[in-house]
Image 1 (cartoon, rainbow, N blue to C red):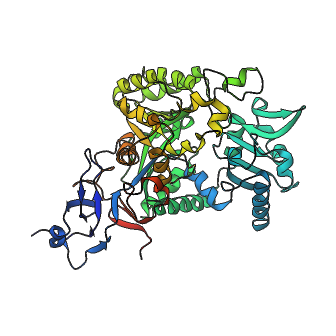
Image 2: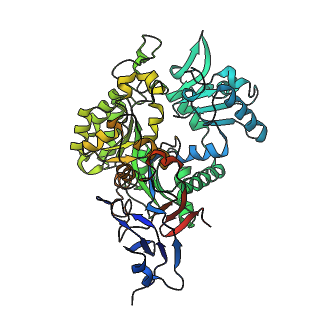
Image 3: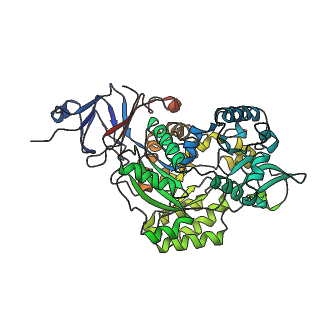
Length: 519
């Protein structure tokens, strides 16, 4: 006698997202595993007294989204502190930060996250300044983090509070005085000082994961620095309170500690696993710190920084990749500009474990055809963010920084697939919203940048699962795989021009409903 299912999702348009994609009416789940797909009538024999039945009324069901590049602590801080992502001016940022200061008077710092001056009304191209943030408070340190996290803005009190930790080379000056703008190592020094304590870390991670499941995200590859977040994840998993799957990509300064305690790539349990060793090559286009071969189109001087900068010197990065590959870790390296990608690729393709490690280049925005051919040959994954196309409009940030020709060569998602490079999608939490990312991928400005709906969905499911060595249990809806599902109110195939407006109805992780807008 066949055992009853724990959950049956039925009267749906169930897309397996296999290659090729196939469509069913229902899916049955037992013990967190998919046990049957088929017509709705065929699966009724698996319905028992205690079976939960989710009637979808024709809604689309997909494998849950896996975000291959997140910063969950920062996402949670967006939700707990001032969210500046909707601000349309410096004045708006000041107002939001002032409101935050008033609402949370006992916190030492006034924090805001996610501002993007390139999206503000008018022609401003410079970050928030010390003088502007001094209007929020002259006594309390005020810190505003740019959307890319490669630039932070500080008021006078914050500059004084963090003075001993800020490398002078990464502070910006005007007429000999600090503007309050800090980039790269200086920005990282500030971020490390603002890392949440244990109690707040649990609060911000819980908020971030609750937000993630509302958007259909069932798994994340979280880039973590410090031990608190991994500890909180594991505690929540042990208590049965972790709603998503978490792959921990540790910053390279954790490498020796991981080796000492015997953690390596893919060790861990069902919900929390060790991923890659994470490092950097360059910065970002928005902060003019991505390392490019030709000067920035809007470079203001003829100095050395007109082509961006190294966040991690190539020789230092070589030491990291050598040590990590010696310990057989997967390696993921942030590289955005074409020169940074060249340096990074040259190191990764020469590692002894390159053919099996699934090393990753994070972002790979200005990748060339030659780079793609070499990545395909070495099996290196392109971990990319389709939502970055938000800056690729005519006259937008990439036009300003790079000029039209290079702007059209950024994030060539179709060219990546044509070159047979494994493609994984993530958001970098700018913002964490797979449907928004899919909207940009399907409606990008050039043919080389655009994907079909199915191709884009597979990059956010199967592609991200592959990047995390999880393609045998996640990323497609097939018998024997874990039951991580998302139910959409409308079909992205039928509404490809407005995928970002489609709502998530239900999210299921391991056969358990973790978000339900229908009840």
